[in-house]
Length: 161
Image 1 (spheres, rainbow, N blue to C red):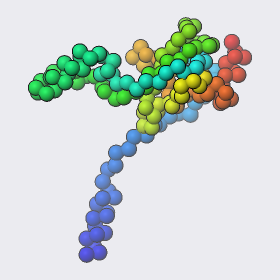
Image 2 (image 1 turned 60 degrees about the horizontal axis):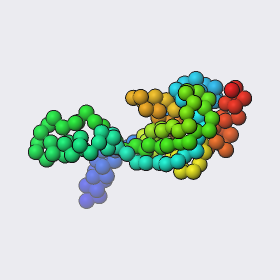
Image 3 (image 1 turned 45 degrees about the vertical axis):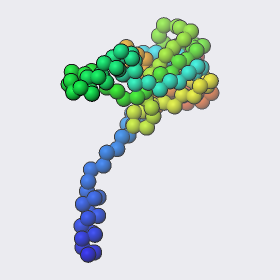
Image 4 (image 1 turned 90 degrees about the vertical axis):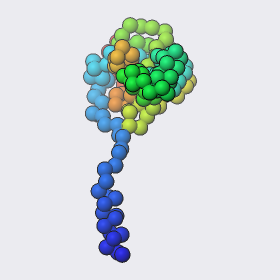
């Protein structure tokens, strides 16, 4: 009996486990991060909205895809990856790279394995964003962070302005 239990535990321990983890190269200096980013700004979060790409396609596409799925039509919009994300709207107070605007929307992941940043409504952040399919995106793998945190590089950005 002990042999059977030990064998069962060994088999279970050898099974592959699915784990999502964010893997980042440590961020560089503010100057290096600015050079690698397509957009760098300081802004206050106005809203954080959970979305999916399917939601962005509109209700007609979503309804059409639902009918195609129900009736077994394989031509539904399978090319749309439906991983959730957050759409974050900022009131921009300073722009260090990119076209100066008063409002900016940035996409980020949900957190955890997708490297998404947890932006809080009402808080001010330094955002280092990159283009992702034409949409500015930000995450935890950059110096993006609260404007009050010296690690975000705000002082250095202002000095280089």
